[in-house]
Image (tube, rainbow, N blue to C red; front, top):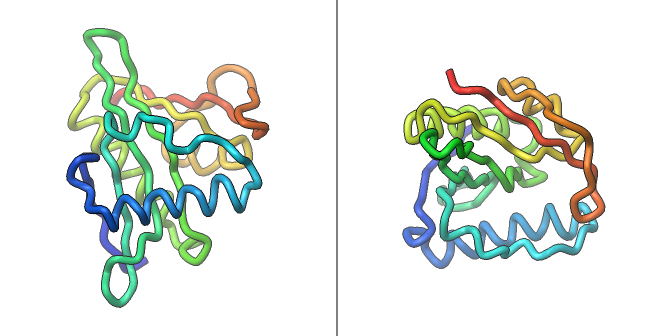
Length: 154
């Protein structure tokens, strides 16, 4: 893995970065997984975005996730979502590193908040390795089995 991980507020993403994020999410979640759903859900403006870029010019987007910070005083958990790695970068530890950075980010910016995510069932082991535990029953979202997973605050 030889790339760069960077955090961005939505309004600080360049047009090129935003285009790359939307393309990667579409390529994997909609095309590869054959799941037509409204990926542009109006929530990106409220999130922090982690981009993993690589390539000769350092601008090829190979991984992405978004984070919504929680609020311990309101009992609101932080949330990680849209975890995605480009096909060519899979198997290199990119997802694990992104999750580690996301957990660290949440713990620093929203201390004492648990962190939740809705995992596709086939990927539970990835999230379990990052300290997440399954909560509740499997449910269908856009025709794909998911399960709520949670990591308690450290």
